[in-house]
Image 1 (tube, chains in turn cyan, green):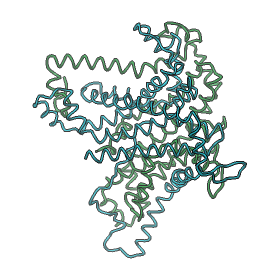
Image 2: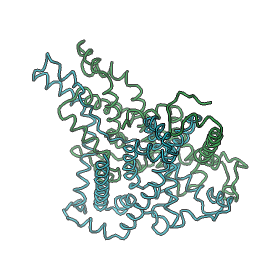
Image 3: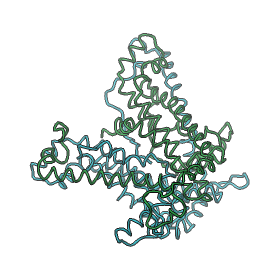
Image 4: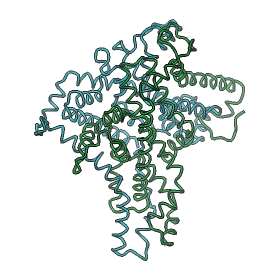
Length: 318
Length: 295
């Protein structure tokens, strides 16, 4: 996913309200009702879509997770689905794998784009070209990009691209997706390559807002490049760094298409099974939509927990 | 060498344009340009040429840089065997509809929230923005259940393009982007239009929309790429081979099709979005960076 979501509140204080609503000469009740009606008419299409495809499914997911449907008959089963889901040994494997992936992806997919952005920001030449290059993989259909990795890069024989490079450098070759230890790192490499462009662009925009005088001052105080990054760049881009950390966690916790395509689902010794893949498995292969809904709710709760911790931490910083 | 007028960054221009700094700068630039080209363009080259290699050549060690005997047949096979024309047409069709629906409904909603400001507008906006924090995987099952039996109407949307178009309208990020843009259009203009007796719809059509072309372009591009890149949702709601999108189609064929042909199909599937990106990259870059993060 290109990271483009920016849920920052946008109300500007003191902005004049709409002329339709506050024109001094016509604030009659009739006018107000009519203007409100117009406003809501314009909203109706989008709101209906939100109701049907977002807000209602949200509630329905929670309700479904406490129900069981058999032969068209739906009964309330309390925590049964949850018990069944948690008892499944792949539940814990999937969580372990997903968290491992998320942590690895934080190191690569999160820190790396930041340093790439800092580097690109220093260049006065070829900037446009480099930006296009980094963003290019984001535009590939994920299935295309992943088949490329699956068939060419991670070919376990010595004809594979990565193994050929390793061999040319006289390093040991790897079985890649066929080795349980390498499954996750290999998926993180593919995923980072595919997705980092969005984060780089957002960081680049943020870096443009860092006041140059701060670097000037730090330099006069004798701060080297590394100190300037730590004491100027990072604090100045703190908000965006924190926001993207959150979005990165939410995005990587949904790891799905990488295991599906690179590892044919579960991967060697279940090393690729992810929570999202398990949702897909339960819902659409084992015909256990209720179990899948319960898994979805568990995932939501875990992510909400993350968000709560995140809000706490960032609130304290300010 | 460099313009000395630009803003000061981590390292001062002076330091980069003199003596040792200058040498380091140019060396680093050369290394990065070469490295990035290899890392980001290299795999694409490998993909395009790999699809031209024969089965034996693919398995050869060390791998060859150029196809010895280009097998154009692989591309032809991909095109014919996977019925890529049909798959591409489907994907274009879904993308075009997604643009249309999002432009109409999301623009209208953003206009209402930004300029008409009906009561509860902020509550509705808040509820929309809250969905940004809900991962798609969490909703996949209840959304699917909703689509196969739409509440009240009891319509099954499987294999209907509406199953792709309508959920995409519920896109808080687009509404947010559009609203931010509309917010920056002066109220005076709208007050003036109102004085002249323009209805809200007329104001939207004749004043707001013409001024908003850049952001409408960005939203359209996002809509196209969202359809092109999505995988699981179209896989679920377009189960018939005739209604599949190109990504899903390639995946469905990957099992029983020679690897080269799958890669050739992947290349063909990637071409439209890459072209769209190269043509509109300025708009995409500015859309990603402006109007969003002025933290």
